[in-house]
Length: 390
Ligand SMILES: CC(C)(COP(=O)(O)OP(=O)(O)OC[C@H]1O[C@@H](n2cnc3c(N)ncnc32)[C@H](O)[C@@H]1OP(=O)(O)O)[C@@H](O)C(=O)NCCC(=O)NCCS
Image 1 (cartoon, rainbow, N blue to C red):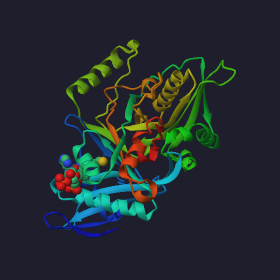
Image 2 (cartoon, rainbow, N blue to C red):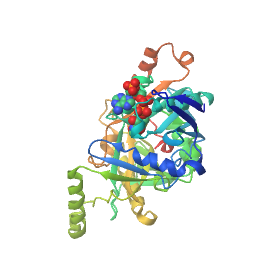
Image 3 (cartoon, helix red, strand yellow):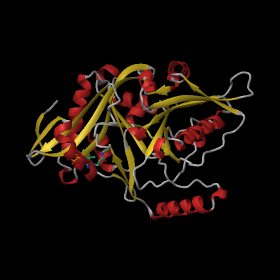
Image 4 (cartoon, rainbow, N blue to C red):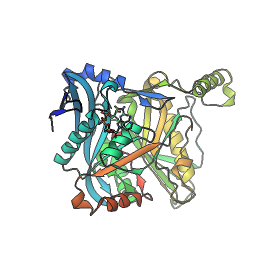
């Protein structure tokens, strides 16, 4: 998997595994030179000095780097794990944090990095490779979909809600109970796994991870039979990396100032002050969000507010927003998680684009068309967004 290749102008590119002692400082430069965002907003990731912090919690992971004339110019990370996909147990390889420094782009380095990572996935028995990007990231889609035959199969929305430091009052008719890890795992296995794609086989490991704060269910107190219920688990991403907005549209800057003014001087209006997102901030990520029954919407909202209250009490006030990733589809019913999960439209985005590619095509499907249809027809199933992939 490691070795030497030639970029399009015949200059040598060395691909090798990341070496923490040797590469940490240079890696920081690569990361800083690659801004992620659109023309108006840039989001910076502060990995707190640990470039592989985002994949450390997965069972098998790797980070590759690309070197030109002994200078580090690009990198990629990946992890492999077993999941349920279309009711089958398969291994999937997740591609993330692909970076090539601007002066070295369009010389084939990004493509070499992805291909080498796919080889590593295959050596670890992965059936599929998948990745997520924004729908306006032309370079990324051009590379994965245009050149490397990935197929777009989902467009989930990332919903972001600022934490209200004053706390929120929850409805008195709703009860919320924390589940033990074993209880949570069996609840998920009983009710969620058959309705979800990408459900991780090692759910117990995720729930036991030190970053997993817990799992809660919400129900109506006066219901003799539990007809409606909601469940979610919380992952404390603040302990892994921080985010920071580098540049924002003027409207966002003005809104921040107005909200903070109102929050400070006119608190009786009850408006949530917008947190300062220009300095590094952490977030709680909600995963395994699932609800059933006719009155489930209010329960989901109550659970999200309960988590927001926990975040407000979080040590050091690091956690400034609560984040959930949900499928944009409403599945034809009146209920949609998008509508029930409290979020600020201005902070959220509906342009996440998930792409997938079979690595052992001949064993799994007969043709690329069958493969594409299999995913396009599976939209009625929810997506389980693994907090370790965030
Ligand atoms: C995405 C990125 C890694 C591509 O790296 P790269 O080394 O330039 O990629 P390659 O040279 O291998 O490009 C391969 C193909 O991808 C497509 N592509 C690459 N950049 C493109 C761009 N800016 N616009 C449109 N298509 C593009 C082209 O089809 C290209 O083939 P071509 O040069 O023969 O036309 C790089 O632009 C980058 O680091 N971007 C910032 C970070 C980022 O967005 N990462 C992806 C997160 S998922």
